[in-house]
Image 1 (cartoon, helix red, strand yellow):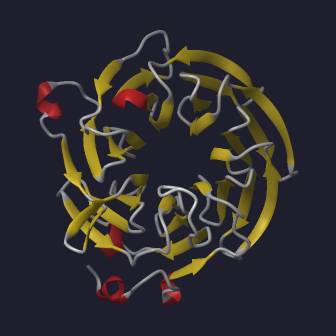
Image 2 (cartoon, one colour):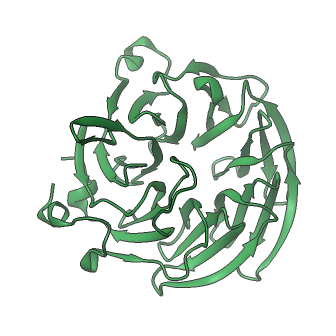
Image 3 (cartoon, rainbow, N blue to C red):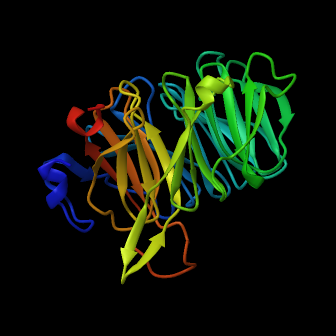
Length: 336
């Protein structure tokens, strides 16, 4: 752990390595996503029904558009187009240059996940209506609906493969070029509800987190030899008055170059892990409330951290919702 992170305390501003975005959303933050081509722009979706584009380098809000209900996820398909979905069941796309948007289509229930697959040039949505839908961003139009075994909680794209995490601790691996059948059906190796799945940038596997302070590192290759390498570990747990408190691990984001990853939990902490050497590289200071979403910039030098209460203890007074932009170094993100 570097000296800098060891001495930072509480959720206060921490000098030059980090700042808070001005004009944050007015309710819970559901997702933060850096642009695929630049560390300058960040997309933020919120329970206040908005999707906002921020200019991180200028610390200013560039534009904002709204849904008719809370927004649960957002994504870029390229540097100038955003996509978003939420409790209004609708998928919207927005041209960030012209500030013009449209409704592309809808699900039968809230849209929980929105993800773009550059390899196949397709947008993927996952919903509580127990389906995944594909969308052609060029037209834009629906390109197929695929039934899942339960409500979709999380999904991630690894090359041309799609990894879907549903209720009932199920994990499904699909081939986006041939959605006629499921490639793999798995059960989560964690005993509790799945919260987040993110694919390794090297496309070899994925990381899965649960509501019970655990993370699993999994591999896509079904051969016994490769499956032997999978493992899980405990994290985001704190001893308070001699009792271990266990927190949900809400967010995972990979460093695109190093294949290391950050996790964020309802304990307010962000950890960075080296999955190859099974080590924690660092832990940042405690944020004022739950870490709801994380996003590394494309170059890996910035990490966006949404500190946003997730109603874990019901409607109690809590710290305001904020996005922190943190400069990260190779010492914090590179395998040792």
